[in-house]
Amino acid sequence: VIIQFHPYTPNAFCMQASPGNGSEDKHDIRWLGTTSEKKAITDQMDAVVAWAKKNGNLRLIAGEFTASGVPAAAHGALLEDRLRWIRFMREECEKRNIPWNYYDFRSEGVGVYDGETGEWNADLMTALFDE
Picture 1 (cartoon, rainbow, N blue to C red):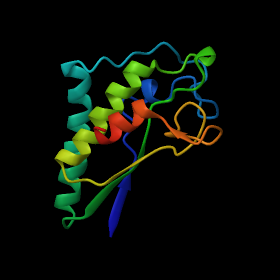
Picture 2 (cartoon, rainbow, N blue to C red; picture 1 turned 180 degrees about the horizontal axis):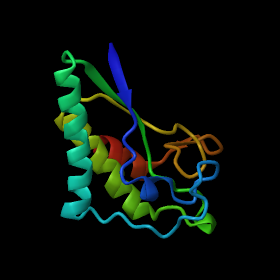
Picture 3 (cartoon, one colour; picture 1 turned 90 degrees about the horizontal axis):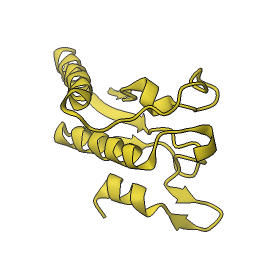
Picture 4 (tube, helix red, strand yellow; picture 1 turned 30 degrees about the vertical axis):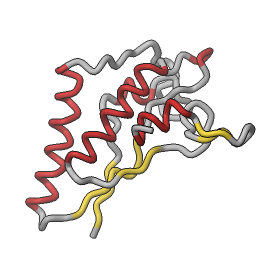
């Protein structure tokens, strides 16, 4: 058994201005990577790991994570904040030996690949793979 979880902490930051999930009116929320912001995430991830261990050493996978970067006109998260958060999430998963999946391949505002140009988003690739 592999337990999939979706780390979207803090939800207000990750989903801001994203259509269809009740966050359309949330915008201009920053994620600066402060000690308290990071602690909220690491505490949650540590709790997931502890739960998996307590329940039979279940394997985990971070099934998806992203921070909405819907077009700037819709006030999605700032790119610099998104990249900081994405890198931190990836690093925290890897510290705990949790495989991860980034969401999404080519959706507008979050995609790592541009289907129109055939190019990878270099900033996201760096945050995801230290390339």
